[in-house]
Length: 466
Image (tube, rainbow, N blue to C red; front, top):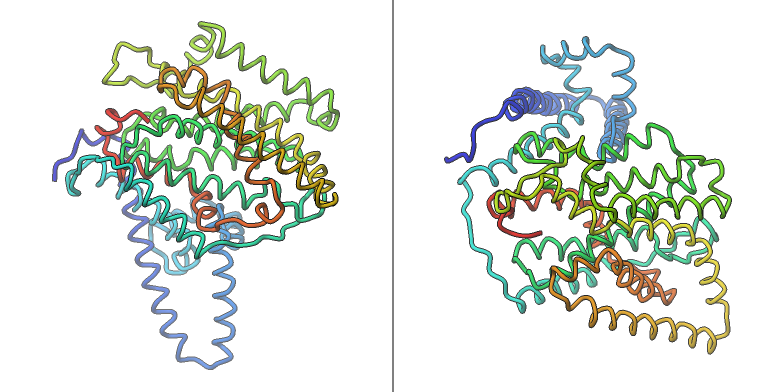
């Protein structure tokens, strides 16, 4: 086995933490097996009690998988000191291992995934292959996935709107998760096949993800009014926990996973925009000022030469990256380029979220109109959307990637808006979603990070522009 690069202190620390956790988890599973085998011989009344205990444990496991400590585990950790729990873990106390089996399993699985990344990316145990792009094969595989998804996972939803109380389904959670899912499949296939001809489409997909960052976070904070430290910490944890360990285990720069710091930045900006003077958020004039301030802030940072470098220079150690293919570029060049491409679209997402209730009310009235009038309005919307989309495709999308990138920050909202209009122009179309894509949409961050280490070795990523 050939290992690329020397072993780092971070990798040694990871191994020293992972090995005892993995051993403890294996032993806890053995203890659970012994416990289950012995309990199978007791009276049925005892079996009923055991069944109830197992049900509680399964509930705890479900909570753990949702993100966070289980209720019972949380109570136990609060009731006993960290020192005591550490001693019980190091001494492999049976009761402690059984109590925390689900947590140990989650930690062992997480560590195993990182080990697999290292084997794929930093060793020659798994073979390499040359990327070959065939448009027909690319389109066939994606079309096949869509057909399978339609056959197996097409589902109708009847969820009620938080605003109107009716099943309007306009930009519902099911729909946005599906949206993320089918884009993510194309994103992964783009990298796997080196399908550089759809580069501009990938730029639009990334803009759509950032649009959803503005849309989703604005909707949450505006409706829930939850600006607590717990909620903020949860969001930062969700965005950066996985990537932080990847940086440690694989000795990579944070900027290589540029989507993570980019979403973190724009999440912070949405949080700041709504969190400052949040008790006045209900006033339209205040919200207009806040959105205008966001635009001015972006213009100040990204449009005025020199400001970006001065502002971000203290964080060069975190966001800086030196491309071996272009060593003469400033270390913040990559961060400037990546964050600048989608610097406005998160604000557009905020605007769409703010007017979401108004659009829902208008759609509700439209559905109640007489058939001829309703048909004419919807037909007009579809016709205008198709015309605008066609003009964008002919005038913007067909440009070479360097020229396109210059227009992208100012035009990415056009295809996103066209898609929203076409996806939501009938009640029936809004009510259905492909749950296979929706499931994939829930793990976009994980698949984004994983593909770089499973499908693309480190050298490939330097050579391939993504």
